[in-house]
Amino acid sequence: MSYKSIEGGVTAPKGFLAAGVAAGIKYKNRPDLMLVYSEAPCIVAGTFTSNVVKAAPVKWDQRIVAAGKEVRAIVANSGIANACTGEDGLEICRQTAGYAAEKLGISEDEVLIGSTGVIGMQLPLERIKSGLDQLVPALAATTKAGNDAERAIMTTDTVPKEVAVELTLSGKTVRIGGMSKGSGMIHPNMCTMLAYITTDANISRELLAGLVKQDIADTFNMISVDGDTSTNDTCLVLANGLSEGPVIDQKNEDYEAFKEALHYVNETLAKKMAKDGEGANALFEAKVLNAGTKEEARTLARSVVSSLLSKAAIFGHDANFGRFLCALGYAGVEFDPERVDLYFESRAGKLLIFSDGRQAEYSEERATEILSEDEVTVIADMKQGTAEATAWGCDLSYEYVKINADYRS
Image (cartoon, rainbow, N blue to C red; front, top):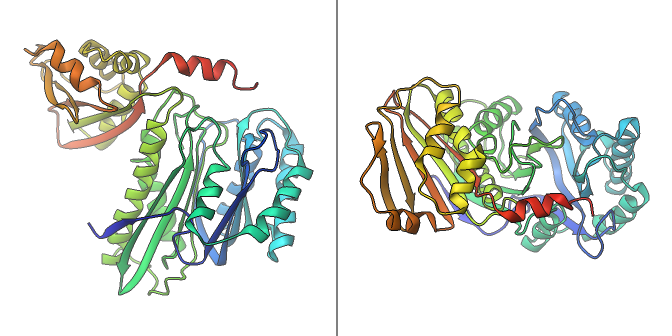
């Protein structure tokens, strides 16, 4: 392992500052507006929702990322998604970026925008401006400042989601920090999910863009809470180069080390979101081994964690292996069910539950013990090839329905 975990989030890398405030956008007496700012221009790579219905901030950010522009700041709010808001929603993005740019002394095209919350409501521009008046002087490079920013984008999340790592590239210390939010409406094809990752690495735009696109396929796109792909999904990676190492412009040793560290950051944030799924009691991991191809392994793993019956079985600590076999069977991948082995695994141990086309000999009490942990893995050995993939979700509890039945209130 070329990196080590350190305390913090988006403010861990050199030159990144952040702040979060309560602007009263929808919630009362809780943070709901945040700002991340880099002291130097950043290259940016991003991926966005595949939903045809895209929120205004997604459209705003897509344009900036596609144009290859350098950026300096991200302004994001919770409470209101600024989705299905027509031209007025885009105008809110433009005015928010323009006001932030004026306060920071940069151009509006250097400001990225993010929103999460209720769809269809218009954002109160004056409250955003008032919030920015508080945010800019509050910017700081402290761990607390990064945490304040993270808490300002939480909606139904119950815990903040942050991670930071440090590594050495060509003799220079490099850091990657990240934060994300997401608890419900999570089923990415790039979930209501926002993820913001910062680094002081000096890397080319082309390599960063390719790396982000490649890695998200095995991290953020492998989680599911409820099968709903949001209008606002956004993942942005900003690199300001302030570590002052030689530019990574080819796939050399530095590239591989950076790739490994970024994967850890992305996977950690993805798993934190899955575990904090609305109403969840347990992280539900599906690991597919020895599939025919990588894409088949991904498809099978996602099918298992997305299955409502599988999620309900995890909630009930029920060793009903038929739920998981069924989810594998309708995934759209051809395999021989007579060859599949299924296991349950957690901190309490590992247990074979299905093999050679029939139920294995096991103790129901032992299976229940394993399934009662707060992190549970279902392993499917397909015996078709050598490819593998892992997906993450959560159990399905009564609380999920309660939360989403009154989400707008």
